Image (cartoon, rainbow, N blue to C red):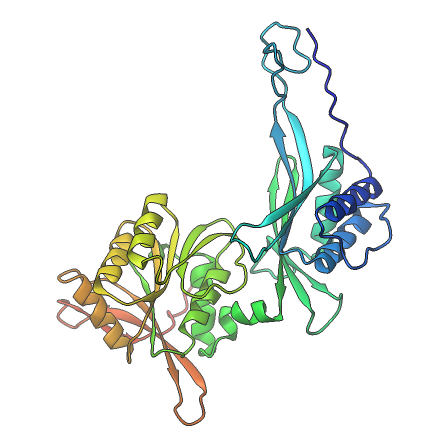
Length: 379
């Protein structure tokens, strides 16, 4: 028995997809303030998507495709199956998903528009060209789109990530306003010496294998010295392929990549959150503020079991921060990288310095020393 599907075919032209998307947005009460002209090519649709996303207040949008299988009918037959028990051929679903932040809850509201799979590949290529994918050789899978186009300080900047697969290119675009861009600066823009900033950015962008070998990163300093900003900058430096979880006290903006965040405070203890994080087996764990030895011990145990760990500690000096960690983990010296933050009492200027632990001369303990660049490799 053949089951006839009543589901209409998804639109296959840029103009039809765009018209359907505008209809979906209007029905959801999210219509853009203005809409560009109807696009007739994938290249024009790529440009129009960013303009609509900016004018409608989209937090994130993606252009995606995935294989799916026909659903079984009431008699157990799948669409097109004559009852012979053959495995159904997969179909390809493709579409555009736009996500909006809401004040009522932490969940985002989604508006979706389907499209024919034949449009997916050329649209992905057009998006990559429009976002200048790979223009930054350090980030070959990323691009940037500004709104308004060409603005020196744009109202919005979309950080665009690309992931190639057999069907084409999956595209995700994260919208960031000025405030969010300030909250998630590039590591190299922090008040670090240039060589230390470049090292730290590469250390996380890679990321370095040492991060997963029991070497935590401690962000030390007094309150209001920029430690949380550094934490967000390190989160933002991660490649999109790693899975990270962050416990934060004051969420700001939206992170890219596969980074989940939980707000900690009076209603949610950091210890409880970190225990939950460890059960989920993330690549990275970020902790915005550690206040007790129990919290630090739990995070250090996570570092020792293969999870990269970064945390904020209130400590007057990097040595004080490391001493606190050795108190939490007595008898277990841990190689560490420390980023220390200070604020000038007179001018209010922020400065940062990078430190590492090295064995003492007798090899019996570790001590904190200023970080120095590795000597160049001679060929």
